[in-house]
Length: 493
Ligand code: 5AD
Ligand code: SF4
Image 1 (spheres, protein in one colour):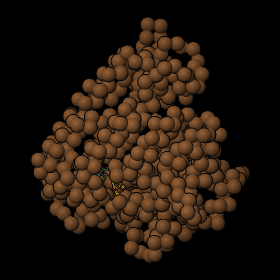
Image 2 (cartoon, helix red, strand yellow):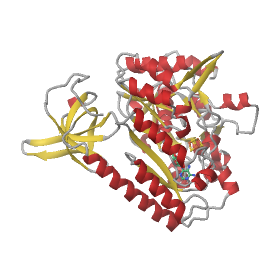
Image 3 (tube, helix red, strand yellow):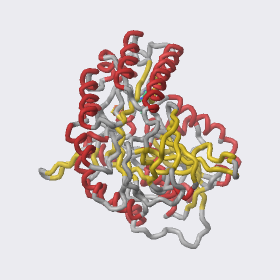
């Protein structure tokens, strides 16, 4: 943390009498990026910025980027080139690229888009206010990136990947009563396809006292649901002296905080789904019974080449443990199809795994070679794109059929839903005028939609389910009165 920043963190507003500057920020990628954008906005508000809805009206434009797949990067470069004319016509506006692509490409961003003013990796975001000031005072373009995984001592590399998480800005959250809370940064698993260990650096568990204090602050701000974030969130550990804190301990501590009603954590690593963690989720009523545990493939040969560190037998054992301790839990997964050397037989094993595990849902991706990963050096990207697409569609169809079938089991049941707000297709014409379609999630992360009103937003509400598709449950609320925050009716998870 720089001196400049710790001064700003005391809550003082840096610029009081000057007109507000406008910030436009566009975020792609994972929940980590959503949280990073929240932090950057919070720090820039203290610097006298307010948010702009339109890119054209902003003084500073930031793209928070993702490098997990090539198409996400190419989209950013294409957006940057579309902005070239605009930026040249308005040289006083500041154009910045932050996040994983900034860390991975560094100087390449300036080479491909020389009119960009700012490149900042995810471990250096706390420097953005200072770097913007430098650009404004005529110091030219600025770059702040973390050290590469071989560019210094372990300690130097770790320290170059920082978080500045205590800065929060409720207006940037998905909803004001839901928040992400980072408990871990970086990753040391080095799966051969994945760029994240390079862009987000070594795995570091944040100190538990900071996490618990941040959760208390979130509760004070009115937050009801906290989702702990980490690349391998269940591998979280923090050691001080001979005292070790694990994810289960953090869940126990944050569970005590008044006002917090639901706790989730993503993303889990199969090998670290310990019985103790599952027992903790079972025994703490605020813990969501939703687990996101990517399998990536159902073939042991592919898993070995991916260097995932487990076999399908290990994964099935983990699923048995979950079924044993949390019979109502919903499990979701990620899969990569068309990884180097994946044969039709390998792919069929992935289909078999999906059929056997019956995930709530699966995120399926076509393999995308990432320069800088071991996979890019070791293996040939030899599965043609049309085969990747075919496997992607086939696996998705298998998963969707399972999701639809399993969702039908909820018909006639009453489920407690945390109301997130109007659904995407919000207003319907009813007999007596417009009707709001509301949307929320159950304790096991299933999406529920019903006809309601916006006053329900932020409440826990019992919804009776009477229809289901593969992705959504449709229901009705039995009373239209304002419901108290916690409803203790017998419910399914
Ligand atoms: N190509 C395709 N998908 C990838 N993922 C990670 N790296 C790649 C890649 N190179 C997927 C994994 C991971 C999810 C977030 O993105 O499935 O779990
Ligand atoms: Fe990437 Fe593997 Fe780490 Fe997940 S566990 S972030 S896939 S290296």
